Length: 75
Image 1 (spheres, helix red, strand yellow):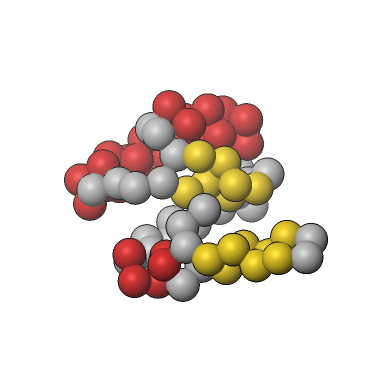
Image 2 (image 1 turned 90 degrees about the vertical axis):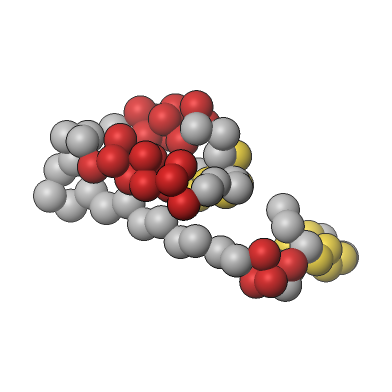
């Protein structure tokens, strides 16, 4: 199921930033449409999909730490 969900999210324009984490810009209508598509999936009782809207201000405070350096701003 995780691979199917990943494909849906990529098809919606989101970018994978970790094994099960995606990021991308969406309007509120696009987010609602995504939630509807995901809601219709045959998830098991233990499956859960979390959606965290992040405002521009908070995204600008993002820190990406790599070996020997810290990068700031959107990924």
